[in-house]
Image (cartoon, rainbow over all chains, first blue to last red):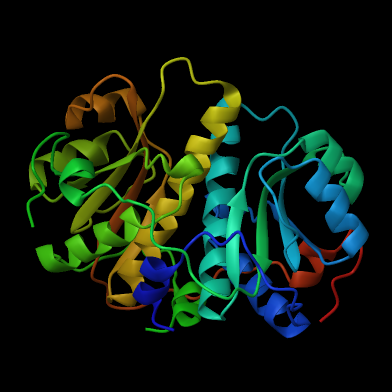
Length: 173
Length: 173
């Protein structure tokens, strides 16, 4: 699938079929995540792929943002430096978002739907996944096969959000 | 360009030719940014595209992470709610990273090199770009045509960063 087509065609999918995702496809998606750029190339992310039904059910219970069980979760964890400052925290979050988007675009291009979820109980998730201290479960991406793509939610037009040279100056088109 | 090829082939480019980027291509890149998912679909990002040589030079002076002037900058600003909590701040940063990756992948698929830069003086940048209070210049993406792609920096192998069902359990391949 063409990159621009993936970027514009990707939708957040919340209803999945029961079909599992092959290990080959999951590995391809993880490999895409690995190629995300990161601040100072620190590659601070760790990825826990969850396919075990019991573990998935435990995660769902502590994640109000997840309604139905997908075929798999990828939990993106960030390995942090002790005593990270606010600025570092900010960068960890941006790194995490960049990797999440690689996961979502790679998945979509391989026919897999995804939804990124930030609403979950971090400490509970840490216990379920046995994530060590100093590493934080940061984002969840749900993954599964799907029957149909939802309509695109409304997007702001470029003229509202893009400017030329100075904030508020019309970009034009 | 194929989406997976873009994801794996993209490199951070820091040396650009003097060739300007057409408005058509910049608009296509902005449109890709606009399709990024965001928490609650709030679309809190604003994008200031900087092509004016004087403004570019002012930005370079307050950005120790930028060595050479590219053909353009895109400054990603986040529109924040007043009194945002730490968790909201975290989500703003993740949203920003997701949009940045759309910009970088779209650009690469259109033959444009990019590098994401987080190291700059935020308040100085706000003044230069006349960004209103409540909106924060959050990330810079430099953009330009390039002559050659640098070699890929080392990436951690999947067995170090990917796990199955619980942290530390081998993903295998």
